Amino acid sequence: MDQPREIPCEAPSLPQAIAAALRDLETGHAWACSMVGQSGGDVWRVADRDGRTTHFLKHGSGTVVDALVDELARLRWLVPHVPVPHVSAFALEQGSAWLLMTALPGETAWEVLNAHPERADSVVVALAGFLDRFHAIPAATCPFTASAAHRLHLARHHIDAGLVDEDDFDDCREGWTAEQVWSALLAQPLPQAAPVVTHGDFSLDNILIENGAVTGCIDVGRVGLADRYQDIAILWNCLGDFGSGLQARLLAALGEGTGDRARIDFHLLLDELF
Image 1 (cartoon, rainbow, N blue to C red):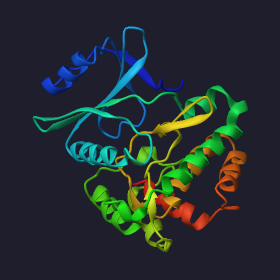
Image 2 (cartoon, one colour):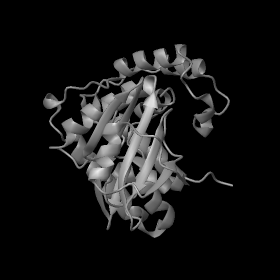
Image 3 (cartoon, rainbow, N blue to C red):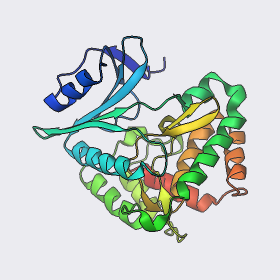
Image 4 (tube, helix red, strand yellow):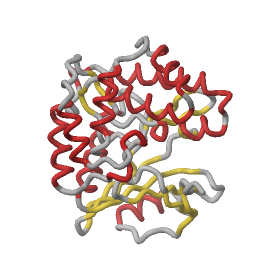
């Protein structure tokens, strides 16, 4: 049986700043714990009295603190450029971080594709259009780096610190170790394309869609200047769960022809270590 994507729960014990923000916003009447994309932390969905999702709350300690600080900075920087959640409150308390954000309208692209396969082509075109918009953010204004060299440095740290979840590797690398992924990466040339502003984790769970249009993106803690295939590869890989035809449709919508498989493979290998 597939694992549920969220489960109802009680409200966690909250820092004063987060609790005050929720009281002021007259929300917090129903809570659900997300089982998707937690990356070592906790994620809760918060709904109002009528069951409408109003906020998401992230929490974590250790390395998750740095990740949430990174996300906070990028959320604030992205506001003039693309739709992202509004930061309602942020708190650092006893070695852990809490980030409360408004919910974007719509459903995730994964939810739309799963529930409405007949809409797949239009969803892929919408995703490609939003990705082009994201990559068109003026690179000279971006203060964050996500270059392959930088991410390789971080990946090595993740391996050495035992932070890589080897059970979460793609099916084609089932049974591999993190060191095997690292060796395969080092055998690949670094992408040499001009950097653009990338999302860093452009997956179907991180893009919201309503009435056929993308309403924004979430989980932006990896935003930075990088090869555009950093995003293309992750989205291409996700679409493979719904058929290779959608992967080809994505590349066509992006004007990439059959795509650069060497760059796709490099970024998918690198992503395994995060």
